Image (cartoon, rainbow, N blue to C red):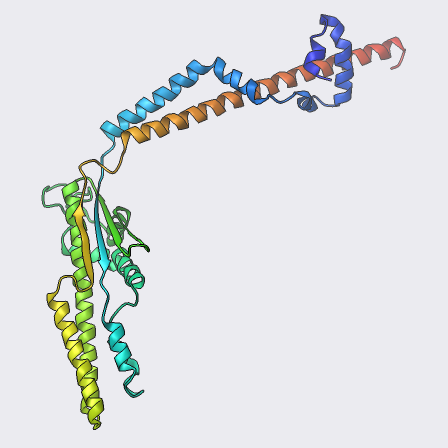
Length: 342
C-alpha cells in the first residue's frame, strides 16, 4: 500500500491506514521502499518544467567556452611531415656473406647487415630514435631551442632565457609537442610538432628530420667502415684466392655504402611531404570545444535536477514515515491506557 496515497485519503480518517502502514514498516527508513520509482516520461516532464534553467546554463557554458577558447587560450599550430624508409642493401650483403666460411660469418660478418630489416622495422627504429631522450636533448642543445633568437626574454618553450631548465624538463616538453605514427598500409611515417608559431613549428620539425638523417648517416658510415676493416683483415689473413675475391667484393660494397651515405640525402628515408603547418591552429578549436562544453553542461545539469528531485522525494517520504510512526506510537499508548495496561 502506498503510504503517500493512504495519507491523503480523507484527511484525519487516513491516519488509521497510516498506522497500519507504519506498523508494517517497522522503521521509518524502510518507508523508502514504498516510494515507486519514476518512469522516463516523469523525468521528461521534470526536465521540461525546468527547461529555462537547463537552456540558460547550457548556453552560458557554451558561450563561456567559446570566448575562452577564442580569446584567452593560447593557440598552437601543428606542423606535419611524411617520410618513407628506404630499403637497405644489408640483406643482399648478408646473403653473399653466407657463402663464406663459418669463421667469417661470425660476429664480424654481422656488420654487413647494416640494414634495419623490413620497412616496418626500420620505421619503428626511426620512431624510437625520434622519441628518445638522447636525441631530443641533443636536438635542443645543438640548435639552442631553449633560447629563442627572436626574443631576449622568452625562449621557444616559454621560459626565461636566463632561467636554468633541466634536461629532463626539456625532454618532457619535446615529448609532449612531438608525435609520430607509422602507417602499415602505405609504409609512411607521419611526424607532427606543436608550437605557438606555425613557422617555428615547421622549422623545428625540419630540424628533427635533419638531425635524424645526420644520426643515421654517422651510424651507416661507422658500420660500413668497421665492416670494411674486418673484411680487409680477413682477406689479408687467408691464402684462398676465391675467398679473397669474394671478400674484396664485399669490401667494395661496404666502401660504396659509406660513400653513398656521405653524399646522398635520401639514403635512409625519403621525404614524401616536407614540414608544413596550416594557417588554422590545431588547438584550441573554439566551435568544437563550445559544442562539447554545451552538451556536457546539458547532461550534468539534467543529472543534477534528477538527483535533486530524488533527494527531495526521499526526504518527503522519510518525513511522512516518521510522522506516521509517531502517530502509531501515540495510538498504541492511548490504547494501552484505555485497557489499563502500565
